[in-house]
Structures are given as structure tokens and as C-alpha cells.
Length: 211
Image (cartoon, rainbow, N blue to C red; front, side, top):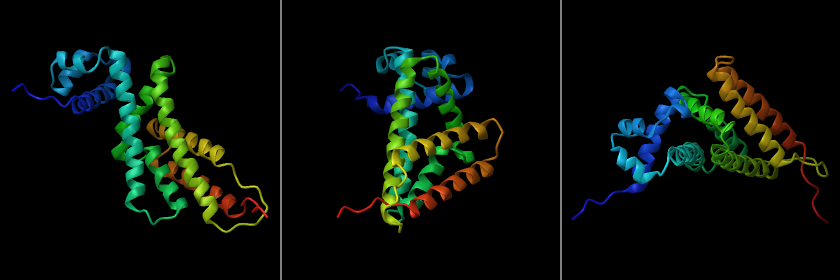
């Protein structure tokens, strides 16, 4: 019988090879031949999975975004009893990619972001990833606002606006740590200070209940 090929597994393996090469040479320096060698598959196998280098890069971008998002969701699912505020703290920590074990992933992500600034096709999956993360943040912020005690009648912070700010802050801190402007500890302090201010605003604001 002909050998059955798990194409989805092979595509993910190729995506990992793309990420390693993008970390070393940037996305523009990635070739299908080099990817085949790094993934230890034939060039034909890469070409059967992806019709072009652009399609291969698009899949790799989405792969990195999904990996980060799934890691966040797994961390939240591991401790379902935690408050929404604590959950958001953990989610922000994961997304900022500040820990040493995520440093290569941070370099890869920012390499794709830089390339996407001049390549609209790469920008699309990045926007999708950011949208998913912002939605996750907004949901946790809305839940935290409902959970905490607050003064009646005071307008609460807008979860979407707060989520946009928090995501932009976490994303920016990734770059600051990578270039050495901040240490990981300093970046974490910035995040914690911002979150402390957010929780203070949430504790003192809650929408007025309908009569």
C-alpha cells in the first residue's frame, strides 16, 4: 500500500523550519530549498504542501500566531478558578513574550511584522492574530469589571479600548526587551503597573443597573 502522508503535520513541520530560518535570515531570506533542508524533507514535499514561497510564509505567520494564542488559552484553562483579573495578568505575560524561553519566538514574530509593513499579504494573518488576542483581552476585562465591587452609576472603562491599549503595550515591550532598551524584569514591571491602574479603574466604575 502507498504510504499515507499526514499533510497537516508536514505543513506544521515545514512552518517550524520557516520560523527557524526567518529568525536567522529574516523572512525575505527564506527559500523553499533551504526550508526543505531544515525540515529534512524533499523540495518536492515542500512544493506539494505550498504552491509558492508566499503561501508558505503566510502559513508560517498564522502558525506562530496560533501557537501563541493556544498557549495563552492553555494557561487559562489550567486554572479555571482564577479571577478574570488574574487570568488577564497571565495572558498578558504570555503575549508579551518576555521570558527567555520565548525570546526566539519574539524575534520571529517581529521579523514577520517588519516584513508585513512592506508586504500586504503577510499583514493579513498578523491582523487576524492581533484581533483574536484583543478579543480575548476585551472579554477578560469585561468579566473583571462585572466581578469587582464598584460605585453605582459611574461609567466603566470600555473593554475594547482597554484591550487595544494593553495589547499595544505588551507588543511594544517585546521589541524594547529584544533590543535591550528594557530588561525583561523592567518590562514586566511596566505591565504590572498598567494592570494595577486598570484594576483600580474597574473597581471604581460599574454601569448603572436598569430600573
